[in-house]
Length: 100
Length: 170
Image (cartoon, rainbow over all chains, first blue to last red):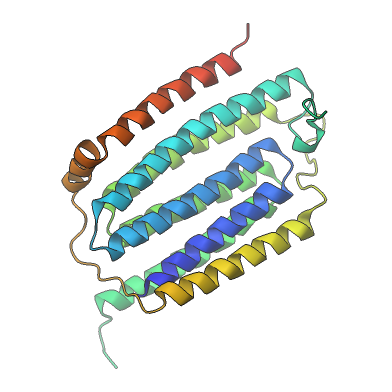
């Protein structure tokens, strides 16, 4: 089967993630959209790994991306929780503490 | 016309069905008004990604995807939702006022990516043979990419400690 199908699927997921990051204002929902983008990248990596006769390098990098994504979600949710506790909500457009 | 579907055709059909389900669920993640429903749509997308890994014969990655994303990350998200939902405004507006602009940007990037992929890899075919052995992945991690592996493990440790320090009550 053509590799472009997988690439187009991953591009679609990535662009949905971009839309979510730009259009959502809830911190948790923005983190979910970032997960969508990271998964799109992983599909790309694995598809190219299959294209190169199951070269293990692509899958190894996909594993690295999964590990980084897990770390990112942990720290991100901790930050969202901290903001929620110190202020009232998790709406990103109301968080302007560091605006000059 | 062949009576029995070939292996490649069956794979094509499976890919199409899973891809459509994933696309619909992904749009649900970024448009749903209920934040818990959005998280459940994310489960569908992540399970679809795992299924695509299996179709691409990356079995180990498929299992890891189910374990880490659906097992751990999603539970973390649900905890985050439960801990931060303001009971006073249960059905708040989750979108900001730049939806149209965001949609335009996403469409533009999708168009550019689709054109580039079609231009560069339009004639490339996947020849799926034997599945990747998990031993080959382990060899690759612990021989070629051992430095990267160590860096990632240190980063994971640092992120864990950082998350505890950030979220604890003192």
